[in-house]
Amino acid sequence: MPATQQETATQWPHRHLLGLAGCNAAEVSLILETAKEFRAVLERPIRRVPTLRGITICNLFFEPSTRTRLSFELAEKRLSADIVNFSSKGSSVSKGESLLDTARNIEAMKVDMVVVRHRSPGVPHFLGRSTRAQIINAGDGQHEHPTQALLDLFTLYEHHRDLRGLRIAIVGDIVHSRVARSNILGLRMLGAHVTVCGPPTLLPHRADALGVRVTHRLDEALEGCDVVMALRMQLERQNLSLIPSIREYHALYGIRPDHLRRNVDMLVMHPGPVNRGVELASEVVDHERSIILDQVTNGVAVRMAVLYLLATAEQRGW
Ligand code: NCD
Image 1 (cartoon, helix red, strand yellow):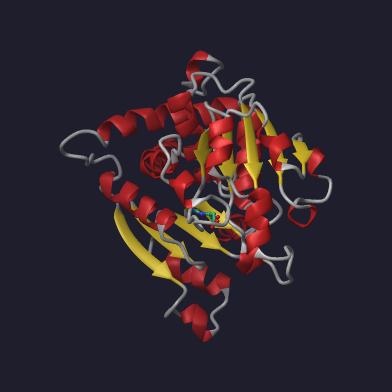
Image 2: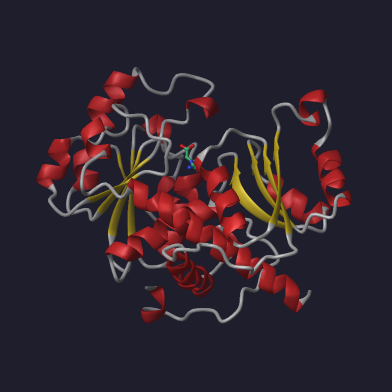
C-alpha cells in the first residue's frame, strides 16, 4: 500500500472532495490507507460502524447512475449516516427549478454532506460555494470522477505493491471521460506510466499535455502493459458520430481474448457499465484476469474512507 512508498498525510485538509486535481499524493495515500481499514470492516459479520451517526447526507443525482449511487448509499449506511436520496427524475428540477434554488432548499433541510452527480462540469464546485454542506463529486460531466479513480487506485494496490513504473493503458472514449481524467491525475501522482489509446476523434486535442503517452494503435498501447483500463463509449455526451460503427470500433479498439493470451500478466479494468462486445469482448469481462468486480467491491470501502475523512475534517472546524 502507498504508505510504504511515499508520505501519507496525517489529516484530511479539505472541506470537500471536488476532484483529484486539488489533491496531492500524500492526501490520496491517506484516503487509500483509510480505505484499507474500512475494507476490513466490510469483511466482518456485522458490517456497520457508528462513525457517522447524526450526520445527514443527501445523494443528489441529476444523471443516471446505478453503481456509484448504490455504492455511496451502502457506504453511508455502513457508517450509520442518515440518508436522503434525490434523483432529478420526478423532482422539481423537471418542473424548472434552478440549481441554486435546489441547493438552497437542501440547505434549509440541514444536510451536512451532499454527494452530487451532474452532467455539467463544475456543479460540485458551485454547490461548495453556495451552500454550507460538504460536497463530494460523484461525477461532473466530462470533468472529474474522483472516487472512481480512488477505487481504481485502491484495486491496483491489491495487485501491485508499488504503482511507480506500472504501465497502464486507458483505451476508448478518453475525450468524454471524467474517469480517464481523474485516473490520469491519480496514476501520475503515484508514479504510474499512462498511455491513452483510441481513435483520434475520441482523444483530447493535445492529450500529451496531460503527461501521458498517446497512440491510436491498440497493439502499441498493450505492448508490455501491466493493466488495461477500457472505457465505455459515452454516446450520451457525443452529439455527432465520432466512430464509423460500433463493429469497427470493436475490431480496432475492443479488448479480446487474444490480447490476454499475448500479454499473459495483463489485468483488465473497467469502471462500468460495460457494453459487452464493444469495448471488451464478453469472454474478457468474465476472464480470471478481469478485476472489474473487485473495483465494485472496493468502491464501498473507498467511499466510506472519503466520507469519514471529510467528517473528521469538519469536526476539527474551519
Ligand atoms: C462512469 C461514469 O459514470 O462516469 N461509471 C461509473 O461511475 N461507474 C463511467 C461511465 O459511465 O462509462
